[in-house]
Image (cartoon, helix red, strand yellow):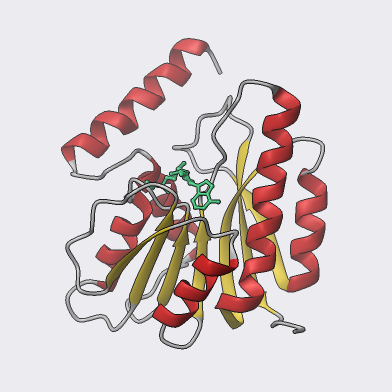
Length: 206
Ligand SMILES: C[S@@+](CC[C@H](N)C(=O)[O-])C[C@H]1O[C@@H](n2cnc3c(N)ncnc32)[C@H](O)[C@@H]1O
């Protein structure tokens, strides 16, 4: 893809997000993933890890709608401007810590039907460090689901292609019955990010 086309696509989703009142271009990634894989339902309990500024959470809130019985718990290191929906709860914290995980567990009614993670570390520009941090974050998500995801629940997670990518997929395959990777149109072609759709959580061994 040409640089021009990549820039054009980025601007296209940026403008669309502005027009349709989404907080980030990222909303379209979840919309496209949901369209393809039917991941969200109005009565699902959803935990959104690395949720700021809240684009994915907006899409979940829309799915829950006015009648749905679902719940959305959105977690980020950064403050998330609250989403105007009674199903929404925001948590400011580091989801890799026990303290924040305990808060999530306490808030969620039972366990989550779906865990979303679009989390990404702050980039340093030093490739090895960035790769290592992204890997660490992915592995933290894979561990956390033991505490917060229902048996047979689903995980939708961003992962970066690179040396450790296959290791992440391998770990997910141990925990889920079905693991697919995909790249929605709204994800920049040049970016190494992929999305993993992991369905049918085998359940915690703890
Ligand atoms: C690409 S943004 C998420 C965009 C979001 N999905 C949306 O639609 O608006 C990645 C987020 O991951 C968060 N993050 C990274 N590490 C985290 C951690 N350990 N705990 C909580 N949030 C984290 C960052 O603060 C950042 O806001």
